[in-house]
Structure formats: C-alpha cells, structure tokens
Amino acid sequence: MPYASINVFTLNAGEMSNFITLQREAFLPLLSRQRGFVAFELVQTGPDTGVATLWWESEDARKSATPALSAWVEQHLDPLFAKLDNPAGPVVLSTRVDDTQG
Image (cartoon, rainbow, N blue to C red; front, side, top):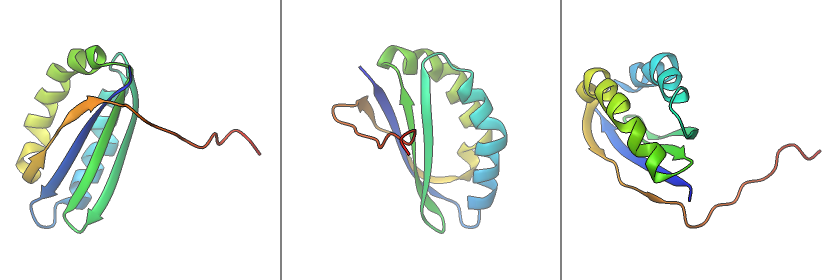
C-alpha cells in the first residue's frame, strides 16, 4: 500500500530561500536514491511556512530510508526549523491527472 510522510513546518524567519536550495541541491538527490521512493512535493504556504510530502511505495520503504534521511535532516535542516510536525500513514485515497494524454 502506498505510504506518505507529511512535514508541516515553520522556519526561522528568512530561511525559506536557504531551505529550498538545500532541498533542491542536496536532499532531493539523497531522497531519489532511496529504495521505494516515489515522489516529493514542497508547498510554500507562507513566507516562513510550508508542507512537504514524501511518497513511498510502502511503509517498509519509508522505514528503511528513515535512518539516512533523518541523519541528513538533523544535520542540515533542523537548525532552520522553528516548528516541525511530521505525521505519516498509508495513502487511502488518491487521484492524479494522467499528463501523458494530449
């Protein structure tokens, strides 16, 4: 069953640009090398707030990637967070438009 990790965060003031750069240049390459990784989405909801969603093939895939990802986040991103909530769970309903059709 597909699995998702949702990260709802508030950054320290003025850190959004740095956060996005770290995500793009370092975290995404690390993430894309993880077995069972499917997709990543980052939504900026305010000047210093956002939601990041990580999609996995299964809960086991997420669990196996957690040690490597958590170590990197702790070292590079934790100093930027003022607040972070990160629930996770099975995806019970999802739909997407197939962009391969005309």
